[in-house]
Image 1 (cartoon, rainbow, N blue to C red):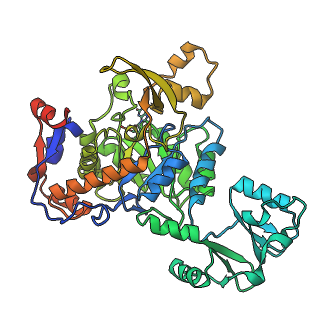
Image 2: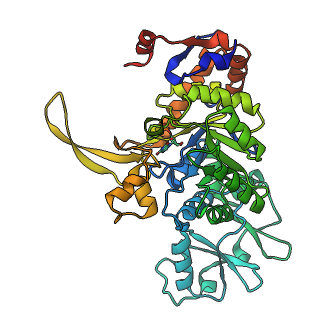
Image 3: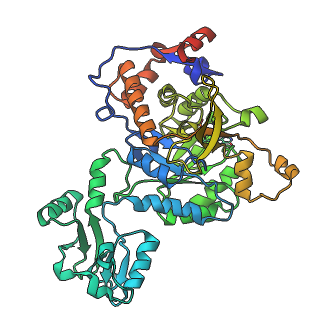
Length: 493
Ligand code: XMP
């Protein structure tokens, strides 16, 4: 079968997959392998990515995504030239959980409690390493040690001194650290170098978190992974440098039209400065676009022009490629050299299985996460007329908007005062809508993963990887193209 020919002009709601002989005993995300790659050197245990949109991904969303085995991309929808807010979001994710804290916040042993209090407030860290002038460990100081204590008190008088601490010299594995904590009945294990200087700190809280989130996406230091988006003009170089400085695991150059000279220059400039950076670029929707980015040495490619829920690009420009065709084109062109992120257009969980089979290594999701607790933005009450009772009730809503919507662009460019004609000239390519506020995104992700496991079972495979192999070996065995009535029968509820 010529798959590309078969899917020309098609998108998610054009297909069903034919059920095959099921071989998994249980459709359980805890046992079915859903592992994938976000980019060349960043593996994921779950192929879910949250979109870099200012109404979707900030630290709270990125933390949950990483804990659940995916990854979040912090948007750049902050005002141009104002880099600090995005950097803070990235830093917050990186400081949420640790394996070994290699740079614990420290205070000198000759300081006063007031300074310790200030440092704890600023960093929101409740345990400080107390060190001498040579950065040798003298003790630990916790919030509890200084509670009700006057500001002028000496840190050295309040800390738990070295003599009373269990300390480990040199590095240690997390499982050995757990053993030491259990035997010694301690919650914190400081690590020191042979000369007594601070090497790191391991806390029971972090070890518990590791157990609680066995599928989490972590870096080599046990911290949650997070990516950050930058543009291709303006402050992008400085933004990239700053997010990398605080530990971003990947940088995504995200522009509406990634197959462009502007993108070429941006990749060159970033690569020149950050040779080993995990660099992802997009968006593109054609084989040529994919090859263009591949040749410029990116580690991942984002695919999708115009399928997004908050996006009006196709309406306003008439350019784009239906997302299933775009994914198949991209998959054939990339030939497994770097992973593809299927970005946009997924409105029901079944679309995730489609995006992953037709070409995505992972899926990027925006609108399906809209309104969840972890999305940024205010919850506002709006009066809604209930059709059954004809009563007006107050319903909580949150805003979801395309990153190229007039409102998002106006905020980004700080154009509150601009005159309407100027704004018109910006050429908005996105929508702003209110969506009902709902619970945690964790529940949404858990449902998605269960449904993905069911797709694997229906597809006659044992893992996501195996289903993908079977599909590409014999697409004709899987694909049904839908007629209008069969589409209604399948998806209209
Ligand atoms: P979903 O369908 O999951 O898609 O909401 C998320 C993706 O939509 C893209 N996006 C936009 N595309 N104009 C566009 O052309 C916009 O204003 C816009 N905002 C978001 C983006 O790729 C995102 O990941």
